[in-house]
Image 1 (cartoon, rainbow, N blue to C red):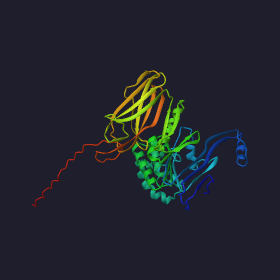
Image 2: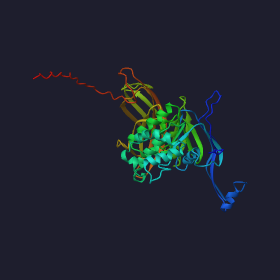
Image 3: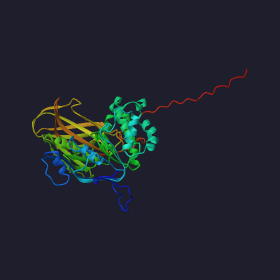
Image 4: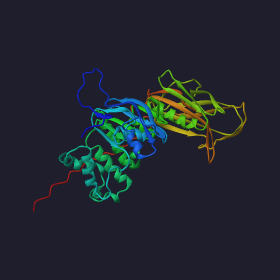
Length: 435
């Protein structure tokens, strides 16, 4: 089967000193055009005929994915994420630009796409894997592993129309990953599965990454993006708005959402190389944040388990009906460690006047593992209908945890148990006497 010039696959070795990306996207765009009639549409394939209407879904998209790299695609509904994936997999033709893939691409897009409800799971595996280019002998060799990984029991030989959405996802993932691809594309489908299978799927994805597979994942799950991906790309209205570290992109993404509520957004590079995002209406703001020991000394290095006090000074710039203050601790890759706010602790401040200053003192034991942590802050108004953002600050404070006294442990939390072991000696039984 010949390939279109927009979708090329190259597996030959290269003499370049820098490894060739497994996926190259250049000046990619997709438009839907409306013509007066079908004849004019056909004629537009051979000559420049102006359409009645032209709607661009994607425009001027450029990025590469290297071998073994994991890239997340994030953006609001309508940003063009699904259209991008369909063009990469070849189910949609780009209007402009090109895509080059170097190796085999496997994709898990729309749940159950390509499955026939009247066929059994086994028959659908034969059909789907055949469309992926594998021979009947190759599929037969892999069938036992596919069935075992899906773990749907006797349903594997029943019509797929009786499957739940989670069972369909299990079969779809199992067949898509039965043979390690060079590029694996995963849409939101994994969010349908149960927690057990999600963990199992992510373990397989990580194993593929260790073997050199590149990953392209679309998800609104912040934890999945930050735990799996090396970088993330933010799409907005069909264009690449930002490409960077996952935690920075997710913070920026949240700020863009806040901006739609007429909030101001400020992006500031930090000395650490991270990006600080501030957003909000500005009716209240954080004047100062600091971390202290119990004797009052300021801290930027904290011992595991040490009692600390987080001080937050807030300035009120307008008369406010109420104020909720919140904080969140994140680890070095942006994963949430702990967070709460004064709405949940039943300490909402009400009827504030412009010019007032509030000082919050948060005392806790730093039962965290060694490593770098950051504090994010939020000031907002909450009620049953609306959360109004006065100010949100990511990376408002960064501090380092060290273990100077505790026994060695792994992880981001220090929850050392008391270990008790009961040991019994096996009793030997006397041999039976002969009669």
